[in-house]
Image (cartoon, rainbow, N blue to C red; front, top):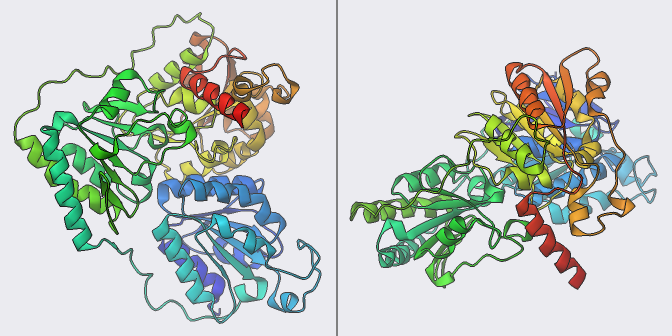
Length: 559
């Protein structure tokens, strides 16, 4: 059989670590998908719709460092565009592969299905310009080179990319790759790095001891591959450290030096003072957003800060570039180690870990009780996805066991994202038990992927927060307005719909004891998807979310 463009794409996807391709078939991509299905190292995961497939690819890409989404031209790709935008906002590398009409049809400007009827075939690629880091419309002549270029840029820039593949180009003959894709390159300038290290040393020495230093870590540290170096830095000395809620689980939250999650004025007092009052503060990969900063109430003193971006580092007002974030972290390791060796720091009071829940079994569920019980249920290796709303802001204030991964989407904040993302994340990290925390309104948007999870043999625990509507919106504005209401669902009937042949179970809980029993039963049956419909009061919200929605409501009213 002749080696073709679709074979080249499949081989390169496997080379960059993709094992599952998410999407929805359409007549413009069917022949291309034959080469995905027939590839020894790729598995096709068909989803109920393109938006869900994009969300699933996003969840996969967060853990694997690369993901692939396949849709058809026009109707398919535009159904997925919200998910691609979310991946761009949250720095997730997803390549969106779009099957398009043949080059003959395009050259003749024919009016074909899934087009706007004007004979122009570039509209939809243009729509992707602001939400992808790179794009290519493939021809038989450029296909192999452009596939390589786009995949390399997506991998190295940690952002989505776009490939438009006409049906005839997909089948065009090409030579097999003669060499692997280029390896990632560290673009750090040695002189800039030396200047940064000297300036950082001066600031850290001025602080006087490790005890007077603090570190605040953000999402970009994970996205650009800095997690291991960050761990080395924290091991170099007992530096008090925190993360933003966007970067939850980036560090071991059971470590002695971990003080908690920082959200500006909405932070616990001990977390806020540890970060804001430090004599020297290392800010690594942090991007402050409205919903992760207590609505821009962070108080970071620039003269006392060492700030690390993806490719820029600064000490006070001095900026050094280009310096890759992992390289900058690595330069700080010996400085912290030297400071720690200069003398033991004075003992500092330990921030208490979450107390073991002591609620009575008969106590009705509340937001506080729900998230305390869920936190106590988690075990090392669990993979937690918390949807935007009460789930994310309720769960994120609790400390996680070592080895737990926590995923949310607080910047793009597209409700319903985490249900399909759980599909992708569980396939990316198959040895972990998925734990999905999602509101009832959000779950209704993307519920169809429960069936896909069962089909794929996945068995996450799905906690649906049943509070009768859009509680977050009610907290912001219109608590009694009909636009914040949803149709009530009986989630215990979900297995009959999505798993008629078995593989799923469901129950409804309204007390602490019922929740404990349901979670225990789910833990004891790791091969069955478990839906837990957790009933909580309609207007109850976690304290962190109450603080944020109050500020958000005030900001919106001023606008």
